[in-house]
Image (tube, rainbow, N blue to C red; front, top):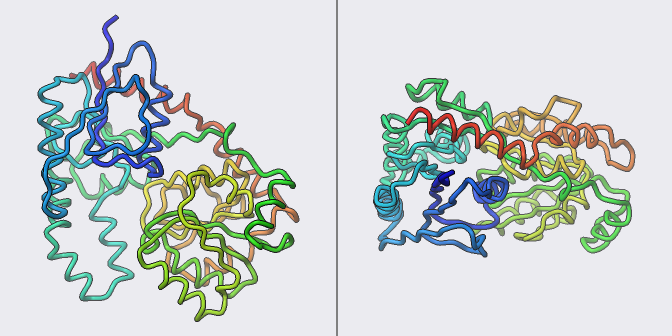
Amino acid sequence: MTKLRLAIVRQKYRPDGGAERFISRALEALDSEQLDLNIITRSWQGTPNPAWHLHICNPAKFGRVSRERGFAHAARACWEREKFDIVQSHERIAGCDIFRAGDGVHRVWLEQRARIVSPWQRLSASLSPYHRYVLQAEAEMFNAASLKAVICNSEMVKQDILRHFTLDASKIHVIHNAIDSQRFQPATDAQRYAIRQQLTLPQDATVMIYVGSGFERKGLKAAIEALAHSDRYLVVVGQDKQLSRYQQLANQLNCLDRLRFVGVQQDVQPYYHAADALLLPTLYDPFPNVVLEAMACGLAVITSTGCGGAEFIQAGQEGFVCDALDIKALNDAIVATPALSQNSAMGEAARRRIEPFGPQRLAQSLTSLYQQVLKSS
């Protein structure tokens, strides 16, 4: 049997990125005798599997638009030259067979961002050559005759695409991210005790965890404002150039002493183990892996209507869902979420919810999609 030559396109591969974790989990699950796996990328951080073939496309770049356009041209030239059986792009590049909408719909993100920025910033975004390029590239890609399928990691993104583009709904496939629930496990009492001691968190406190870099989009401001009017603690995992602004906000709201900023962590699991719930009032997030990881660790999740992960949450069962900017509703949810030591029912329900979504399920969904795409070629 001839091997299926699959190419996956991702401009910059960062091991800690959500799209990259989808790619690596999918590729590891798919890595088999029948597949010849190729990655088209500008740069790869970390150690790729030696069985994967890397195609480095790193043309000169002079700013953001040049970077995007240059990589798109180089990647397309690479896949046309190599004549792969299937090209699955994680970037907005017209001509791919499958597009994975891991970043959602750019227009929807701009609409959500407009809710929190100044009129000047809104005007600047509407005139920005970069945003104009992305919107145009996205439209060209969705309208390309060669596009056979779109992978969404949430129903929310599927609806966003159908609302903004004239794409046949049968081409859109919701394939949720995989979570290894054997690797991500609820904390033992000893693990929780040790990490709380390390972070100087009171053992009897109710602790929230926030995980994500890019604090504006992921809603850290709203998380701090909602937390300020409670007695809860917050562990912040991630980085942002404006870190000091968030520390100042917490200081003004008299809750800085209840926050722990720990930066980016290669292994987030110990920090989940310090917490009782995930707090992620993200403005727009197709389906962050951190929601699955937290649920696998037995944490309730408080998130927003703009998060694809919200479709895994029933209010009061696995957590709570509210508007990203509704500080009162967020505060109510924070106060209503008990410490695991007092009541672990929500955390247990959260873990049960994600248990079916293992790497094998992802591999089977992708394999059947690839067979479908090959038949339609």
